[in-house]
Amino acid sequence: MQKKTESFPLLRDAYAIIAGIPESRFDLCLWRSGGNTANECGTIACAGGWLAMHPKFHALGLQAGEDGMPRTKGARNYGALAEVLGIDRMDAQQLFCSATFHSSLNPPNADLLSDKERWLARVRNFLAKQPTPVAQ
Image 1 (cartoon, rainbow, N blue to C red):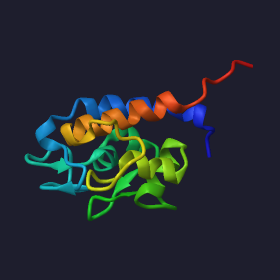
Image 2 (cartoon, rainbow, N blue to C red):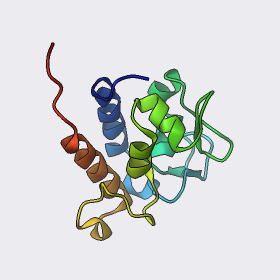
Image 3 (cartoon, helix red, strand yellow):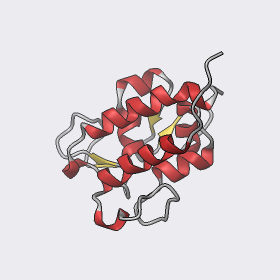
């Protein structure tokens, strides 16, 4: 597994990908609904579901199962996201959990945010809590 400091570029890439998804096609309570690919009309997914359909993350071994759940050869769900992003499974769960579950990374005003805004805030909060890497 990569060190956390080496995985942040992937998390930043994920942030940029999700920032580009229209609000109407993002739902933290669904891995994927309405299509089997990102290009199909009406596809709605959560952050993990969208990443599992993205070519960059496919190249890293992340795939979407029949149910839209992220998978790798060795893991599924939050474990697959953790494996690809090089973060702990618990961190992946806090980042990618449903809007109906409390995440320690939610901002204080999470209930006032859209699901997309909430996920983006979780990533910003996660990155802000990490120690700054020291150049060697």
